[in-house]
Length: 223
Image 1 (spheres, rainbow, N blue to C red):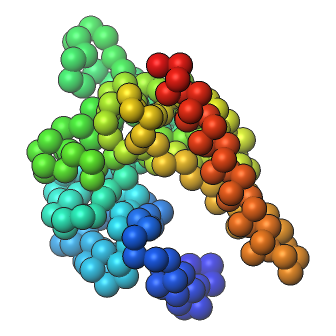
Image 2: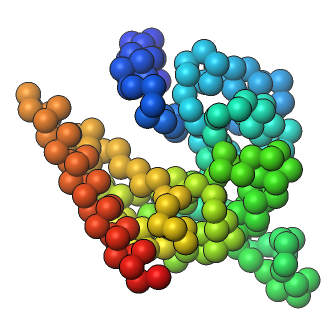
Image 3: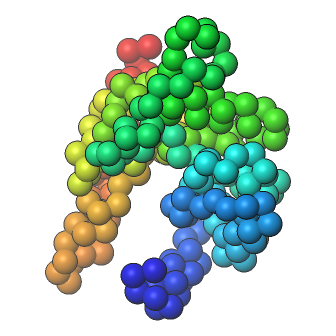
C-alpha cells in the first residue's frame, strides 16, 4: 500500500506475469469477521487469482472457513513468526492443548500449531492448511514440524533477517524431504539497485535455491 493504486496495479501485473503452473502465495496476513473474510477470499482467490494467502488465526474457525472452502487454494496460518518480538505473545504459556496435561503448559505458538492440525481435519484440508514459522527460530520451527508432520510450512526470515538455510531445512522438511517453503524477500528484491537489478535478483534467487537443495539433500540423507 506504500505506493497506492500504482502499487496495487503492479501487484496485479506481477501475478499475471507468473506462469499458471507456479503456485503464488500472497503474504497478506488477512483475517476478519466471517462476512468480511468471505469478501477477502473472493478478492484474493477468485478475482486476483492467488493460490494461497497468509492468515492471522486470532478470529478462529469461522473466519478461516471461506478460504478453505475453495478447492485448490491454500492458507498458511501465522504460528511462530520471524520478527524479534514474536515471543511477546507467541511464547506465552497456555494449558489448553491436545495431549497437554492440566498441570503443564506449552507456548502459545504450539497451541496454534495444534489448532492448525484440528482445522485441517475439520475442513478436510490436509495439505491446504499450513503454518508460517520463521527461520530465525529453528528450535521452534522443529517443534511446529513435530506437531504438524505433513503440513506445508512457509518459512520467512532467510536473507536480511539472518535465518540459516541449513538449520531451517533440517528443522522443517517432512519425512520425505518435502513440505518446507523457504521465503526470501529483501535479499532478492534488492540484490542490486543499479540497472542490473533483474539479473542480480535472478542470480540471488538461483543461489538460494541451490543452497536449499543442498541442505535438503543432507537433511534427507541424515534421516
